[in-house]
Length: 121
Length: 107
Image 1: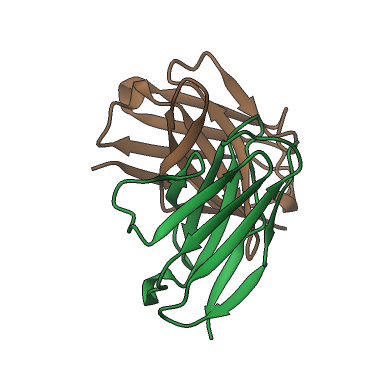
Image 2: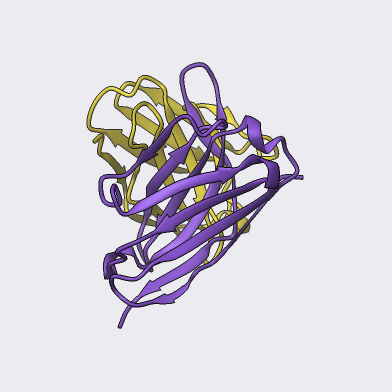
């Protein structure tokens, strides 16, 4: 059974940093691309970042480009999101999501339970 | 970025109803449209991928259709566990973008 468990969220001051983790199990982690998707309180879903299985491709939403960095450790079945220069508008529940990809598209088949990041002084 | 617009934003329905949610893309996305269900305090759950393919384990009362810019999700015979918020998402281009959501509430 696929399991994704996020951790690392919490309260941080504006301008601060936080590192989120996502522990994966139940599938061949290194074979699958992964994403971070966030949801501000009471709002909709916003894609944040993507990383390919080999880490050769990393993509970011414009809203986080230059501040956030996605990475993975395939030996430890773990996904990370390093968040720097945090702003109030980064306050959200952050989900990691596992992709399934065909030759033409990818979509998130499994999601973790999320970890809440609150940016406030 | 491709904008995704869902309608309605919310709807009230009764168990047994047939419910249809529409999703419009700001440009042609072929059939690269996915649907997610989210219940309060829970993670989104994939229902349908690439317009009309039912994710494993999803009841057959859910169906999707469309192509190009106009898509729909239909729930035949709404069940109590279907009251939730539904999101469409395009996976045609980066960044993948979501609709604003449609909340299906009890009438």
